[in-house]
Length: 129
Image (cartoon, rainbow, N blue to C red; front, side, top):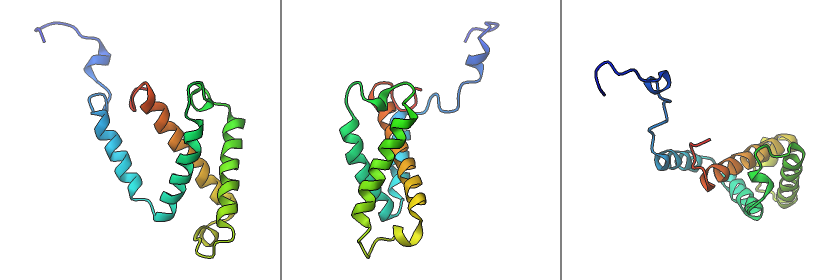
């Protein structure tokens, strides 16, 4: 930089993750998700299968502001599907750990997380909001 040259204020204090490599951030995120319990990882796999069906050009998951009602409906459909799968399973730890309302909250959280990953991996990169 030349001596005495004035730079804009936003260049003097860059964002903390501005220079971070996107692949490193994705790698960290995937590592931390691998630390989830086996039960949560199985839920993640189920949710990924459902979101794969919604992953197409023009899908609601890529809307700038996804419709809250549609997102809630989708999470309820996933929850109902998983509830019917695990309801009669005696080895299911979810029945002992949570009420079904808490189970639905976890499903919604995992679904939003999966959608967020897909939205920012697709075209804009993970860090480029």
